[in-house]
Length: 136
Image (cartoon, rainbow, N blue to C red; front, top):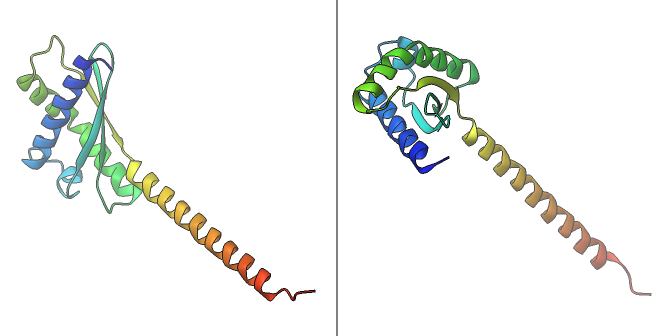
């Protein structure tokens, strides 16, 4: 991304966060979700499309999908708010996607922990085998 697209993406992320914090969205799918965190925004090169990634800690996939649907239905409202704050030739269309980075990170941590335990068990087995051998 160019410096301009990164700057605009950061501004949009901040505006979306403010909208959520101020509870400006009345849709119950969004309102009852808890703390919605926008992790990052990807912009198209022409600044006409913005994909906002979000997460809500402690929610299952079905609930996250409902939140995504609520955000999608509120996209025109949020787009107007962005247009009010940012002076762009055209305000980007918004799309929302669940960010699974935290789930993936937890899964990788669990796999690494399992590998570490397996290595410890293998080294303990090797040391037991060598100590139990009788000298010839």
